[in-house]
Image (cartoon, rainbow, N blue to C red):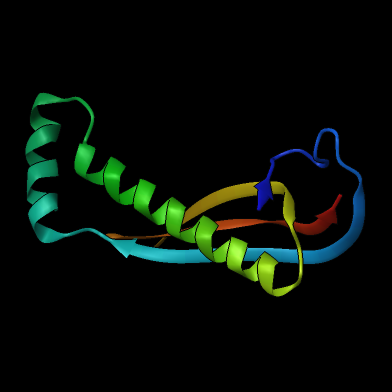
Length: 104
């Protein structure tokens, strides 16, 4: 599956638009990691526990978007974007979305 953030795939021609596709996931903080993260805020620096959690969430959302595109017969996704939002205290949604297309 070709995934690009542009409105076209360089060197390819869009043969057919298959429509909007998306994938999302909601992840919450783990109490053990939350305690470690809280300690990290005292000394500063990257909170690796959250970085890893959000990377996993992004990959899961992208994977679900790809499955949506495959189910529509697409072989590429153009205009791909990622967004996040707080769903409740301690939980965030990650959504990946774009336009499924067939390119040659």
